Image 1: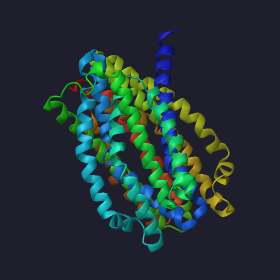
Image 2 (image 1 turned 90 degrees about the vertical axis):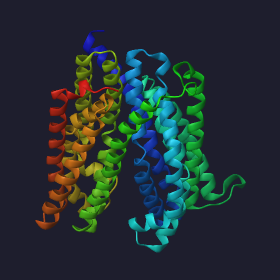
Image 3 (image 1 turned 45 degrees about the vertical axis):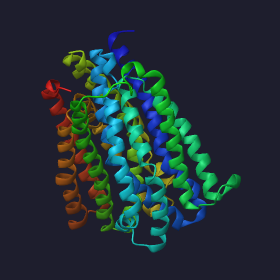
Image 4 (image 1 turned 180 degrees about the horizontal axis):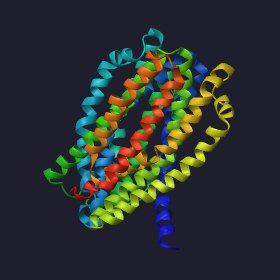
Amino acid sequence: MNAPLSRFALLLRLALPIMGGMLSQSLLNLVDAALVGGLGETALAGVGIGGYAMFMVTALLFGLSSGVQAQTARRHGEQVVARRAEALNAGLLIALCLAIPVSAAGLWQAPRVIAWLNGDDAIQRVAVDYFRWRIAGLLPVALIFCFRGYWYGIQRTDVYLRIMLVTQVVNVAASAALIYGWAGLPRLGPAGAGAGTTLSLLVGVLMWAMLSRRHARGNGFLSRRPPLAVYVRTLRLAAPHSFQQFCFAAGYAVLFWILGHVSGASVAVGHVLVNLSLFLILPGVGLGLAAMSLVGQSLGQASPEDAHRWGWDAVRLAWLCLALLALPMAWAPEWLLGMFLHDPALIDMGRLPLRLTAAMIVLDAAAIVLAQALLGAGANRTVMKVTLLLQWVAFLPLAWWVGVSLGHGLAGVWWVQLGYRCMNSLWFTTIWQRRHWQRLAL
């Protein structure tokens, strides 16, 4: 196998399990929605609102994964075996210190949090119960972020996929049993979906802990106390990424608020378009996470040129994968939209924006991959600044101006988003080519 093909093969070997695991993880909320669908529209809406609230809270801790992964990959490249799990140990303690008070606050303030997202009393009651069960599982989620970052950092991405598959099976079985009161369990209704998901996450974190205890002890897992500098570095890396993810999620809430000022139909079509795009970019995100580990390893080996090549190798593969996925969106938008929308007027409204989405995910490939690769180099603040500046200062105000003030509606908002995605990729490409990230110490 020649060198370029061997590099692509390594990228795919690391990225494919990540894609599978992310697909399984994204199904957690979908499974909850499917299982409560038979309980009526109020139950379904409540679970949807509660799930979105949980997504916003979870985003506050998401940076722990990249913070642990970047440091682990650097130690892996330096071949400092006894310190590979150093960041994992620090991350787990930080997760405990952050997740417990956030969970307590969420349980206490659940009615107020849900009221911000929805004004219907019946939906709020369902959403509050569901959200409280889900936020009780915030600590397992935070710990899983840390374990995942460690195993990604040592390039064992297959572990994530295997554990997520088991977690998903437990989620389906436990949620169904608790929703409908099967096997002598209490009938919790919609709240049972949240309880089942939290139970599955507890099973998942136990699997992560047992596997790490068995295979990572030699790398320092729970056998040595990290120095204070590791805690500080982990927080320094995690905080910008967590803030970025939270604001990114909040940006989608603002986007749907803008579409709500266009028309109710625009909100319905916009939800389908956004969910399709977030689902179809998973290959790009998976390749970006693989590049994160390989960039960190190369920098640990004092090979900055190799690190630079890994970024572009991942972008090339992402372009190919995303272009193939974009073809049905461009060529047969009516067929794809018809899977989700049954009103011909809504399908007609979504035809052009879906074609723009097809172009969007391909043009955004460089930003998707290189943003993750920069996290592997420790450039978390740079990624946060660029992402938030383009989303909140450029895209959202322009989307309001074009879509609402000028009256161009959903199509106008999507044209603005296409320009925003192009600018996103150009900016991240420029940062990658300047190579200032190669000099960052971790």
